[in-house]
Length: 373
Image 1 (cartoon, rainbow, N blue to C red):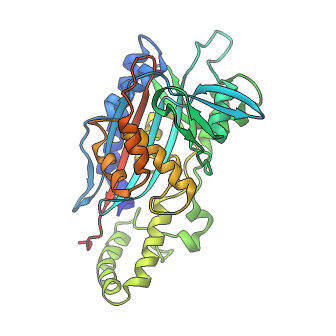
Image 2 (cartoon, rainbow, N blue to C red):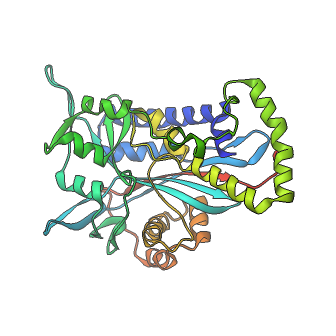
Image 3 (tube, rainbow, N blue to C red):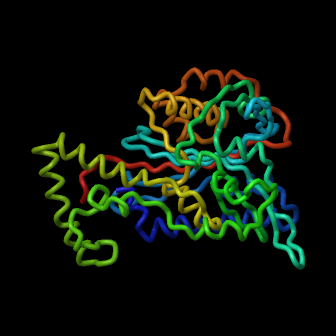
């Protein structure tokens, strides 16, 4: 159902318009002062208060976005690499993509992004991005760290980065464009240098996104009949629509346990495709974010320590956005992840100062188990 929503003209227009408004906001700031924090804050403001987009005929399947900016000092953390202690900022922007089924959180994507503005291009030299090597080490591998100031103050965290997209860089460029690159890719491209030209990321931007269903068509094929192509052929779409309802009713009535398990596995594998590792421009970023294709995945309700740690970390951060992110706060509270962390975060005094802060972009895809029309 969620995938059907993403394929509709309404959803594609909604994504395009969201990217347009976010880009305009960044352009307005960048024209006067290309400051990373102000640019990210403007982008977050542009994403707030937008209406959700729903699947025609199935209003329970929809995508909504929320945003917040947690004012205060920069989120400095300290960690150890090779026996040496280091301190740096963790991120400017936290991007979240959540899937809720029947109002229960079933999975969430997480990506911490450090924004970087491009230097001025010279007559003979391209614009470049300066990269701090120790911040890169943090965003690439996420060693255990302790918060020194800002949102993560006094927290000790060790987060999983299996996908390589828990940490990334947001590349700001004139007149106000915003691209995303995994910290692991940045590390490979740098090769020990302290700065990198934007053009060096072109191979990463042009690389096709990983797709398990293409690599394993017998397991991840969306349709069991290879000769049907409903996304490009109206006749095929009509055939599937007429076949799907009686087949769904039959499986629901006669062999619900086995079929439901198989359907859930196929839907789950489709929604949780491998994360994208780069996004060229605001449009691609918004598409990946709102389609739940960006960041490290964790699932509530498991006994896996790495999932529980990441979930507790996100709940502790989100619960600080008082009066904001109400939809996401409700889902995380219902999931019962990291409840002590939530109480701790709410009991901490509000951070003061305006030198930094943390921006949050949240997309929530909601689906429900309803009989298709």
